[in-house]
View (spheres, rainbow, N blue to C red):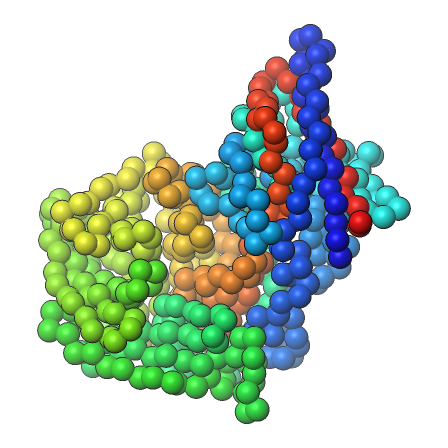
Length: 463
């Protein structure tokens, strides 16, 4: 399917009536073809539980217009013109957006679809979006079509943040033995193209690393698509001298992918006063060699990095995140987050939120909880986001994920994670909805201000 898009932006000065018009053509990315052509882990097959929750394609994704392509994102900086570039980094998050409906919320970054002028045409679709003087203000250097869900709140706003993740499939893995589920729940890294999953735990005074073969894009003669037939390819046990998971029944600790050739383990107990003590281990992905130690973080009052319990159900709670060589751990008072240099523990910064976080997980509260996850280079927490330059964005804080134990693992448009709550366990797949379905860089940026309305007419046709 070859598509062609033509966009016209009209900025009308409310005081003088002067109209500034910009017309551009766009390039189409691989975003829509990925959704239609990829099927990681068989998420679009009825291959697991008979009653597994699966997305209804009609009216959520189809027709392609105005659903899979049904929203618009506006950016203050130019976008990389590459068909494989389907998500923008956090230093250029959308300044404005709109979906396939009328904005009835208080979100001033969001415009509305003109339901009268927008319509299917003979060989495509005509979108008309409108922004009032108070909506969508800022510099506009690039525009991209996106999904209808992505156009609601982009990566999240104070009005809503659930629309960023569209649940595609919740595969019931309840019948798997609990010990096998826990291996999945302790996943730290996923290699989609090589069908590999890495799981790390602390048990019997040792760090245990398992490298699993799990069907993603290929399936063996004796494999199923319900996670019951994963194969342990390597099982390595490390015996540290300093590192351990602190705590008695509840073990406080977490393992994270550093995305730098190493996995990292951390363990601390929350402290409301004094100094924080953090045990750490760094493990090479190539030969499993490791270094370890202890940090004493002066006057740092922080929550624990996470916890595991080995009781009636598989349990994991994740409260930290690693990005760009730094560990992020929330402050005890919920008013900020600590940023700790993995290579220099004296480099510790408290990043203030500017508000007191509700400190709720991205899923419902249960025995598995995910409080933060890294999507691209954006840290997404319950009611906050942290961009690559450590700018804090306050969001609504809704429960937007299914029961979650692992961070979300991304492959192109898709996010995969495992989790459960009190006997109900799942592998859940999501569509990350604010993708770039098209890329349209303006020859010269325009500025939308409070004395201007803006109308965007975008015609998409099959060439």
